[in-house]
Image 1 (tube, helix red, strand yellow):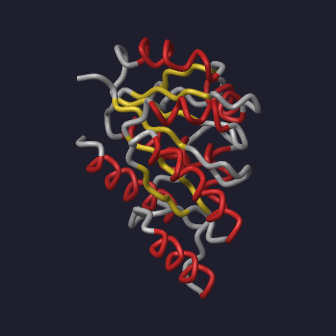
Image 2: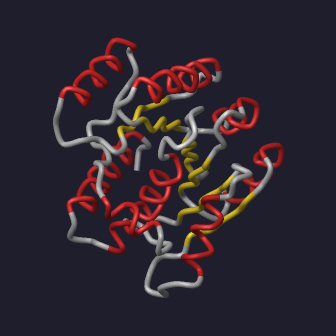
Length: 212
């Protein structure tokens, strides 16, 4: 069976794409899957995280990695799909053509959003790209407060738009920042934390969507 490709896309910068990707990639690897991560964002945040990982702890699962220009993505995915079970693709903001190619190859498109109008406005563009490419897309809440009016209003707006939303999401927790800075996922750095529980719940939900 070819690898399932998960593209993380959001047209707004700073929306938490790379944080979401590394948390899910490490969670799927911890579940025993062979995982690859691909960076097509020229900013190279994922590539920097991988460098930290490669020079850090040795007791964590291996992740295959590639950083390529968007135009070379198809060739890279063809190669990786023979090596792994899941490929997570990190896309650049404000680059519709590169993102479109990554969405076209995706089995599932994840659209991270903080509960803010700016994130939801940008999410609309990404959902439209996924619709045009006939690809499934799912909104993933990140930096989500535990409760409050802003949280509920954002969820209500996403529901009005008709966007599928994951039940699980990532809260506004320092553990995500500190684990990222060490080249780790939170389930590797702080396995008993509330953040790790959130990531496990989200990974389980998405694994069901992907038929794993």
